[in-house]
Length: 113
Length: 114
Image (tube, rainbow over all chains, first blue to last red; front, side):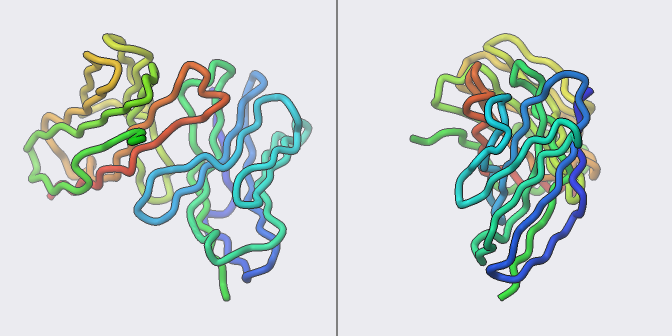
């Protein structure tokens, strides 16, 4: 069964600093991987997805993630944090048919001024 | 362009009461899902549906029931509310090609059982 592990339930960065949110997956078949963002009191929004095309995936709001099969990782990065990036971020995995997303526990990103 | 609409947004239930969480989508998506979100636990799948008349259990179905009589609606029923069902509930939908578009989520229902 597929699963994802997000390292660090809370990450704190200064405004303008690099954002790195870690996600490792376990899957017996080539997975599809997603990052979602949840702002306070809202539903989840898709940030970006990996679907076996390019290994470096660019998403909205300047975020990107790199699929590394050798490391079974799909870490999310942003070169320069903005106050508006403060939110909870979820990594998710799904089998090839695209159903039944399995979510990680989430990482709360705090951005300090 | 409503997307996925969940009602109510908030509800307080007493132990043993029942209620239905409503979910409707206007995107003609075949696939619909119910998740619950608990702090530090991520989202857990309760039930899902791949089309009208077809439902299946997810990871945490106990204490819940669903039905899917139309493509648009996917209500979640709690028959005998328990404190363990205090959570935020999210409904989501996807087209057959969810790999391309991901899921569209509703804004959630915050349920407290006391």
